[in-house]
Image (cartoon, rainbow, N blue to C red; front, side, top):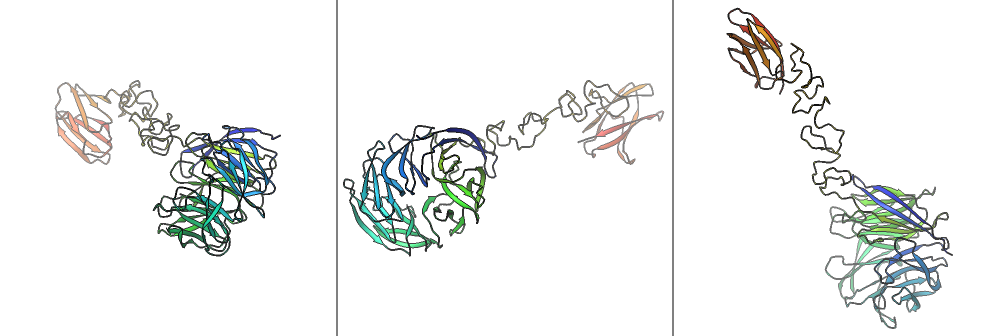
Length: 530
């Protein structure tokens, strides 16, 4: 009996150099009765449009297919009695419209598991020797798949869809050593299928098909190291193909990308001394570039999973979670919501099983200011967001923080339109006017009233920015002088009731009004502010 336990959690991931937060929902399904799983991949084996799962264990394990039952534990069942199948590839090799499986049993040959369309498989032996790498692609462009086999040379076979008889149509030697990994691509986007291969002794090699089944070999990047898998990827913003290489034996991954000059360069996925048990590739944040998911641990067995992005080098978007002994997985839309999720098999003695990471998508950011609608109080205006500076008196919550004051800065209960000094809570229409202090405390526009030679003089406004009004109740012949605090005369006039201060600097001044007949005078302190 397979023990299935479901665990659900929500994981929030903060993306590199971005305010946007991407979230994943995790689903864990416990499977105790499997051998050590070292391969897991997905394909729609029963034709229902949903990804099913293939798991294998090369150490005497038996291939099992898990039918997708929604976001729940896949329904796994054995598809053959043949054990220790490895290096599996999924393709429609008999041309009947459903997906079959081909795999290698070391020292026993190559086996095909032919699908009847309902995920029921018939086991057949293929008449071909053991391979280091395998792919199925329409290399000749005739509309049918050929079998591309990497051994100590490259072999291409036509497949009879009825008998599955193989006919060799190409054989060639490239470099030295076994071709441990190969992949197909249209390198120059000319409509012709090409190949990339990797041997342990040679660099990543392009086999460009210059004529039907005629290949011209060139080195993309030198480097002698073991490789078991080549993933064609889009890691950068240029139009050139990128490559992600992985070695099962070395538990190491590399990326090969083009630099600004168009030359290919490489970078290890992990630092020296760090083991990389699984590397997956997919566009998780929908930015039209692919990210790399890596499972890493050191000699002290501190497992960590990362999502990485290539920006002038590999950058960790964030540490995601701890998953020990994760081997085999993929990137696919598991929940049919239009974005890419990922999954893997966790070979953990404490919690073995299948783990789904369901992508809940990037939050909406309509104005492109880097803040999602969840935190942006106006997602149609890029100038308004939590990172903006509040602009006072504009009636807008610029920084999306209601506690940041936009008006009534002195919190005296009066907005700027009614408060003649919104920085002083003691000055407002409800305040009591204090005589002769040079301040319009009650905001009535009059700061002081003076008596001079049987006349009443009112001076306003104070503070002022443009003019000083002198209102005289009675008959008075007078002279007006305006001095700065150093005694410098700034303005002087006779019998003028409107004094312009537009062109004098902000500051404190002394306004003197003198009766020309009696020479009596009054002095008022005036504040000029711009």
